[in-house]
Length: 285
Image 1 (cartoon, helix red, strand yellow):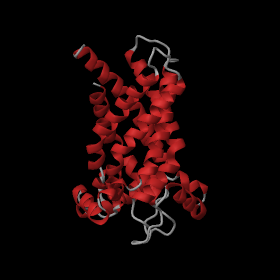
Image 2 (cartoon, one colour; image 1 turned 135 degrees about the vertical axis):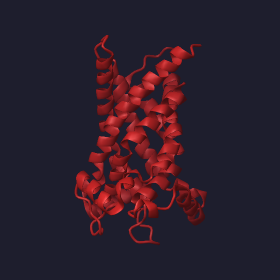
Image 3 (spheres, helix red, strand yellow; image 1 turned 90 degrees about the vertical axis):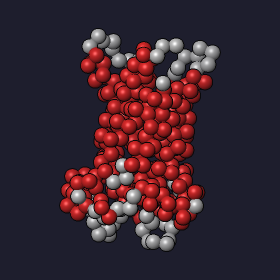
Image 4 (cartoon, helix red, strand yellow; image 1 turned 180 degrees about the vertical axis):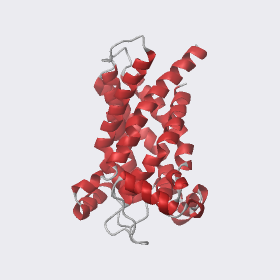
């Protein structure tokens, strides 16, 4: 039931929020001197629409669609399992326990999603019109031919950092604050309050993990000079970005990331709770 509820929530969330994820990736990949340079979210949408067409907003959608069910299922399922282990013996669920369960869920989630992230970032970096963009399977085969299966796990370390930091913050904050919500018989008000807490949890998670997201995109995306590996290690890449582009560059894509994962975080938690409750009522033990 946890797997089904988490997978369903992830599928709906990615279909709604994918264009903002794409814009976030474009900001994280761009450097000074790029032929096409985006100055704002609106400017990015405008230039993509003019040069690549409307369908370009959904470039790289198939990998997250394919991975969202196992990804979110892994996130929520492993979170509940880790929480169960940490509260064994009727221990109270404290904010620390929620955070540690989120940390474990983030590590588990990263191992599942890394190959899909490699393909997604490659597709999102492509600035050709949709009809000229290689398919998901073509990109996957090209990565495997060039680097072997290990190539699909390029950027695993920053992915581990990104997911761990986000989930530690996300689950820790949401479940710690959820108990303070006032009880209400108004279903819409309850949904609104849960969405608000989930939104704040998503925004906080983005704020603390975005430097790892930036270097993950740099490592997994096309290197600035073909044939030369500039971004390879997590903290080495952070240092390179900081030295060449300044501290603010480590937070590139933060606004579209927050716009995507803030509301997306609220959508995920509400859908998971309600689908899980529905399944429990429909299929009682």
